[in-house]
Amino acid sequence: MRILIVGGGGREHALAWKLAQSPRCEAIISAPGNAGTASLGQNLPIRDTDIEGICRVAAEQRIDLAVIGPEAPLAAGLVDALMERGVLAFGPSRAAAQIESSKWFAKSIMRGAGVPHAQGELFDSAQAAHKWLEILGPDDLPVLKADGLAAGKGVIVPDHIDDAHQAIDDLFGGKFGSAGERVVIEDRLSGMEASAMSIVSGTDIAPLPLSCDYKRIMDDDRGPNTGGMGVYAPPGFVADVEGVFSEIHQPVVEQMAAQESEFRGLLYAGLMVADGSLNVLEFNARFGDPETQAVLPLLDGDLLDLIEASARGRPLPQDAISHSGQASVSVAIVSGGYPGAYETGKPIDGLDAVDSSVDVFHAGTALSDDGQVVTAGGRVLAVTAVADTLAEARGIAYDNVRRITFDGSFYRTDIAQRELI
Ligand code: AMP
Ligand code: GLY
Image (cartoon, rainbow, N blue to C red):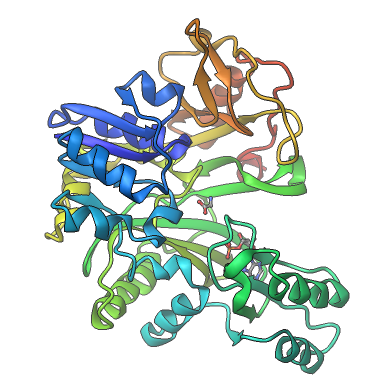
């Protein structure tokens, strides 16, 4: 098969890497890709949200299967557009992608499916939202969310009631564009977060190992949120992993099928786990980034078989992949200054000094005119190690992270540490 990977981050490099291992993969073409995907095939300079451009490339390149990484093209209907043109595509339709692109749609599905989640209310005016905060009282701090997609920035967890009121003004004032025309205010939950992903074909699901990502820029979860500073899999604090899929993913996909928004693709539940209770904070309609960089290296077997069956809406071959039962740790190396302003174009040294058992997934990288790998984004690389225990995987990952350097490079030193104490 000739496979088109849409997107250019670490997640897409990991997907390209795993799919390239399939005996049925003839070619990997990435749009736009990065220096990592360039080593697996061809990169084409097309933005992931350029629906027409991607459909054109799919036809020109005789693509047999398109795999969509990011949420924005899914929410914009890329899968529908490709399928209408006869190109098989992995990912949900625009209607089903609402499980991510509308927080309120996700809540209505969870309510219908009886899935435990953070309870909330929908508001379409600032006035009504301010009033709701007054009813809640100053000590009852909620979480505020733009209903629509806001590039991962539309969730505000205020520390003070004044910040909550300010968030309402920001959301309705257009700070997050049309995503904030409707706002969800929901209960604030506490506990440990975990990500649960499964490949879905209608009402059939194939669970993947659970994982935990680290969002804050600095050790001990200090500093601003980022696109992800690292991840490990699996977490030790989820007692009933099977229950996550039978009590969350399964009822949700059944509810979606019943509501004429059948889901195909990757369903990701962001969970809050506390003392035996489990609640859903959000759904994503695509592989997590950076979770994918830690989870795919744990899988044995042919991911392409599963992805193709999902895209065709066929029953999933449950024996296509298995989990080795090992653990993985993935550490992001980022540009100095990220998530604020940072410089790009810095040559990256040490990539060839990495152990052959370690996977280095590229995110913001590019090839310079003379073929040198240089930085091209905030998150630059994800260094993933797999071993029998989390402690071993962590040791190997950091040993290799230290061999890679570029001007201003930065990484967290505490990924997976909390599991080892
Ligand atoms: P989301 O985009 O919905 O995952 O939200 C981003 C982050 O905000 C989550 O990973 C949580 O850390 C936090 N968050 C979202 N919803 C809640 C909630 N109801 N209670 C506490 N924290 C939340
Ligand atoms: N790691 C969080 C996400 O992919 O949305």
